[in-house]
Length: 124
Image (cartoon, rainbow, N blue to C red; front, side, top):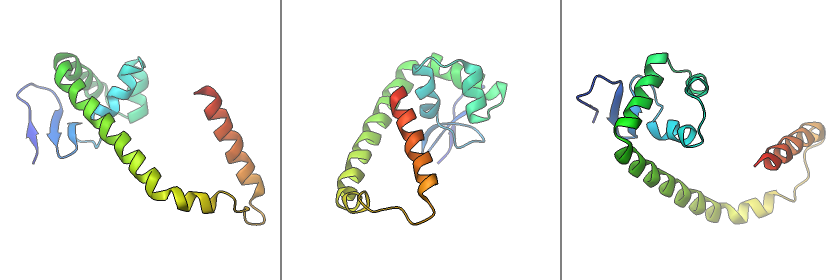
């Protein structure tokens, strides 16, 4: 089911929710960056959108803020529930994998990954 809104924007409703027409990018993806106050130019580049697409998305969010925010909060809630579910489902497997030693010859790659992870976590 694809329904186009009566406004002249490129925002459509798909089974994924409110989506930028011609992409797989939902307004909820954009909302992550809008709520973090990223500039439109950054969001546009991040998702490889045209000027018109990002302008339409931001205008739609502004015009229909209550609706988009309510759906966005629901998406965040469902995402957290899924994360918790899969974390629980994979807890035993992760516990078995973590103590395993890396294959010979991959130590440098693993060290680079550990450093990148530590760097990312220190910024959070």
